[in-house]
Image 1: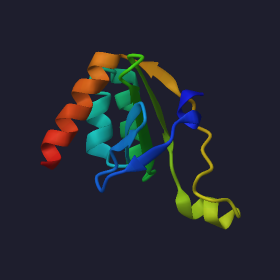
Image 2 (image 1 turned 180 degrees about the horizontal axis):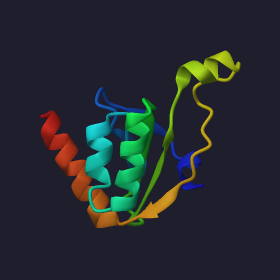
Image 3 (image 1 turned 45 degrees about the vertical axis):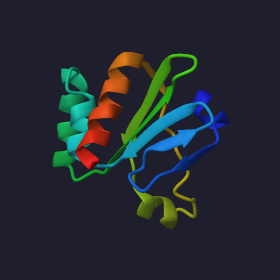
Image 4 (image 1 turned 180 degrees about the vertical axis):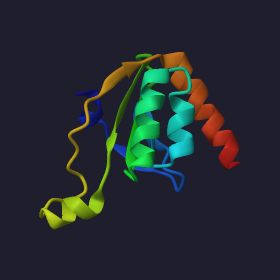
Length: 115
């Protein structure tokens, strides 16, 4: 997994900048839906999880030098992890490759909304 090897520091918005990797992490349903706006099956799953009251976590990573992008999406429940004696860093999501240019455009839009 590429993401495990990257050293990053986060700015207040959650966008991470590392030696070679830029990333973004959110539990905001609107931002997650925006990321998957062209994937109707995933959007249906997201809507189902929202109706169930689940918290989802999307993490996106981009390597500009090597021109790759990947994401991980899944349920996130820090309270349950705490009850089980785990830190909230326990993560069983799988990383999926994504379109480099599309992810860069998404990150640019998110940053513009913040400014």
